[in-house]
Image 1: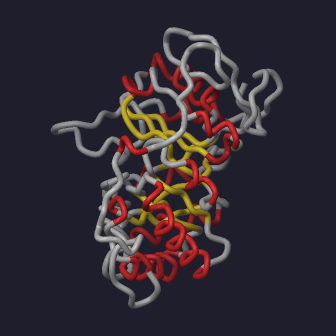
Image 2: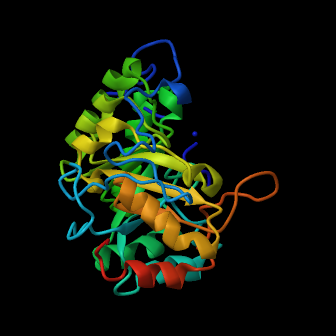
Length: 303
């Protein structure tokens, strides 16, 4: 399944881009806000070098790591189709699995008709109290809002989703109003929806005011271990941020969890699978150390 990549939709029957502009796309470099370095500034970058700095507590402010009691849970970007990976979908519903949410992508969206295999995969998760999110592709802001709403209705009607992962979300201030309107449309459809913006990097800080969570990192371990966190994220609690990292070796799993904690992201997904030519989608299958990461997060409390 493609993730953090497709195109999305306004008021019912409306056409045009998300922001009403002429299909301007957000750029990865367009995120604003100061980045914190290794100089000891609040919530500094964490990497293998063990650079010093101050981690954030549950309030999002800086403070000692001792006694923060931030629950770290898994956000699953979406496995392969349940017909291809039935055992992996079934494993998600096991009692005690520390899941925040699981994204469902039937066929680059909800598909053209209900899929019984996807419904069968989603039902046990609903019964286990796990949020199932429908994946919607914003295509960096160029997809018609009408198409987005059509897909959202299909997810709700066919799979009873609890919210949406809005993938490939724009990043810049210029597209913020369009995304805000889309989020308003989705909340009008279902006022209990959990809405996650899949930027994949730090966007303009204004996006944090309108969604439940932001995916502020999606990429490789080689980039993540030396990554920096935007200063404005300290104004929000860790529960607001998600990090997805592929290519994390088993031996670096604890280090990766430490980076997430110091950067203030309480929802994570780490995998040893890699992206690139011939590698496929790194999120489509469980990591080889799935049982280990479930065990590590099972207590529900970060250090």
